[in-house]
Image (cartoon, rainbow, N blue to C red; front, side, top):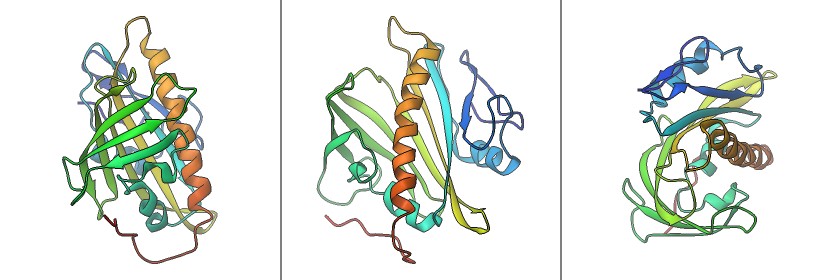
Length: 210
C-alpha cells in the first residue's frame, strides 16, 4: 500500500517512489507534516508493477465548504474540469457505485470515459472514483480527491490533494504516464481554485438535484 512519509517518498509494491507535486514546496523537499498525515490517512493505493502513482497538492484561497461544493458534484465534473464537455450521470441517488458517462473535449487522446463513484464522504471531504470504460488510454485509473481546511495569508483556505494510480500504456514509461496525468490534474485544480476563489461565501454544501 502506498502513502507518504515525512520526506515525501514512499515505496509501492514494485512501483518505485511515490511522486508528489506541491506548488508551495520544491520537488524533493517533501511536504508539511499535516499534509503527509492526510496522505497517509486518505490516499492509499496499491500500484502493480505495470502501474504508476502520483499525488498533486493545490492550495486554494477559499474556505473548504466552497471548494467541496464543487468537488463533490460527481454528476457535474464540468463545473471545474475544463476538459469535460458533457456528463450524463445515472438517475436516482448518486451513492457509491453510481456511474457517469463523461465526454472529453477534442485535443486529448480520448473521447469518452465511464466512471464509477467509489467513495463520497461529506464529513471528511473525500471523493474517489474509478474509470471502468470508455475510449481512452487510462486503463484501471483510480483517483482520490480530498479537501482539508488550512489558513492561507491569515484567511480560511483549502488544501486539495488528488492522487491516482493507473496502468502504464504499452509504448510509454511510468514517467511519461505520470507527467501526462499530472498535467491534466493540475489544469483541473487550477480551474477549481479560480472558480472557488470567486464563489460568494455561503455556509452550506450545495445539494445534488436529480
